[in-house]
Length: 627
Image (cartoon, rainbow, N blue to C red):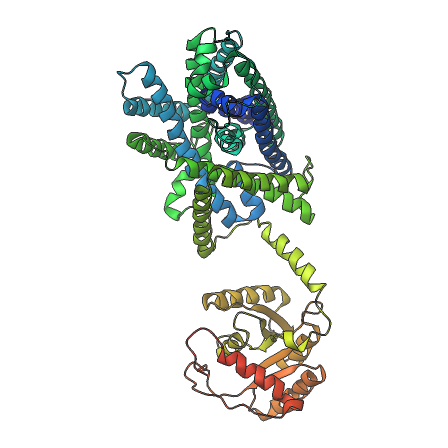
């Protein structure tokens, strides 16, 4: 039965608690909470810590607002943040963010596993860190390959361990007699506020873990906003309570000096170790689940090269991306074998923050432009989204300016690579909406009669078939030289070409020009004959004040065409257009011309035009011409 089949299919999907809330909260409550929170309180004091927690959470809270708006606007499929960004900003920007996001998540698995191995080796010195890391990677990888739901259930156990460690800390006792120090150790010994902020901020950046499970959720549009907000809220409450406990049970100097201060304060120190191990393993598991799904989505959208198409394959009832998961496991094994990832860790954080910034920009710009296709159920004012983007950018430079520049450079290189590949996407992008708004703004402010000093050619080329009269297009390209507009126009016979084929002809000409590295507009119209079509085109072509001011066309030597040709030229003159007629029997172009004679008619006739055209030809900057 169809109903039973649908129910059976959805039964393997995850809900809000298991698919979003649990992995997100476990990533938020990570090793920074256990090993660095005491150091934070000791350096900036109770008030400073509460300010840092509130400011950090406020910045990350703005991102879930934007995520919720995007997720409730359109059906969300696999790929998490990559899917949300690519469907709004286009394939190139989505891929430029998605590829680094995958690498960041994949290498994050290594970071968490190495952190777990180092802490375990500290308790059991006879265990070698490298082999602990390899065995842990294989164990978590086998679990991720076996079942997504089993992996999520394993995270429930880890959540219990973290809860047990927090209860043990609350029930603990003070280490020494101390007053709650509001501003930390003396200034001479403490680290600055913003330096401490930069160290703590990654602790609240686990909000994307649940989002990356979008393809495994029963109802992503409902689960992503609800689960993410719940995780952020619970994490904020815990992070606001812990400083009060720590500040009241040890003085600032002790908090700064001892990374395992929680273990000494807790009623059972072993629970803190279990919490640390649980936090590292849960973060590694969340990244190990999310990273392959981003890789799978990149392969599905053909962002990756053709040979990587096998990453899109899934197996089993839970549709586990086995090939992508195996590749992520292999990458993790290589990185944990060689060990130290401290050099690239800051860049990974930058990739995550760049993703947050892109999500905020997406929601903010969509809302600001009032895009008709952007109708989210969860509405957020564009100001909050853009504030979130600015907050992410500011934090990136606070944490590590060099890593920020490196991350942006990598993203820019990937964007250029994808742009050159000319990826065809069916979902469009936000870019056209932004450009339309800019064009509208500029068109409405163009002067009706432009100043002579700011005159630029806007050329309408009556080229006919571009292949047959390439010299006209080549000459127009030299006149404009990348600083002005020109349109390649073709007039086809209304008796032989149906209207439905016009768009196809325009696409063919655009592709032809693109292969020749010519940037021009294209217009194809139907008319009874070329001369009537040329007259109609000059009468109707243009937008607002942005209309062609110059007509460029070839001559004619056929006697039967002289009268209609002359009438057309006379019409151009009456329409107050500049007219450039190019003579030449052969379509050889102008690359070998050494000089051109200018017909001088005096400044009151064609002199001004001749001077400016000569100057434009002389400064044509492609290096192949010597006019």
